Length: 272
Image (cartoon, rainbow, N blue to C red; front, side, top):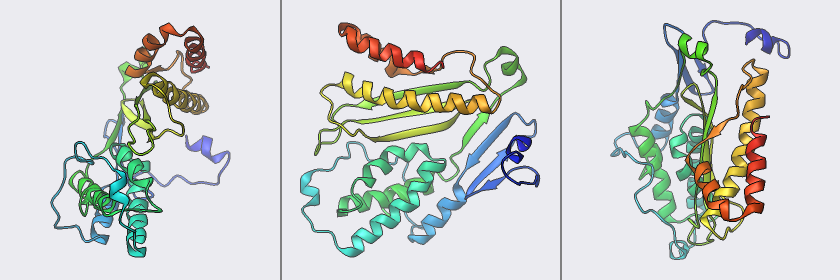
């Protein structure tokens, strides 16, 4: 890896890689596993918003949480907008770097940066030690880690360094726009390497269509990951499998030959 990077950048080898942009990395003694945590960065967020003594949360969203038009009747103040942007900027990095478990909640909050309401700000605070929810959840789970593991046996069997994905969508989840929410997550060696959770850009007319849309995004992501793995010397020998929704989607599309052909073409593309 170091020799490969030296071809483009002037870098030096300073020992075992253990910290990068607030992320702490740790390698096992047998050298078959790596883990990544972002606890130190979370501690800084918690301290910044004065949440050290706040009650911790075990979930990033309260069950049944939803925003309605009535929640935005209050005109936001400049201080509310500034606080909201500061909160999202802080917890957004956590979601991008390591904490895929808050991706959905961050996506939900990010839609209201220009016009936040009290309910949204209180949720944002719950995430880091969440003042009220997201900051508090992060504080309570600061040692959450992404861990990648392999073994000599897996390498011999050809199951190491293989991309596996999962994709799903929730139809018409946004009550105000009737847009669906979709997402995907991809794994290599039992650990996450890429993920996304967000509101779809179009209004779909069925759960089948919403899953079709998010599957297209997953195909693009997987093709990129396969290309990256090939450059790193781990060319994928077989087509990449994507989880539960893919099988369900094929069964739903059996009544529509044209769309089934489109999805089949996309899925075949993942093997290239």
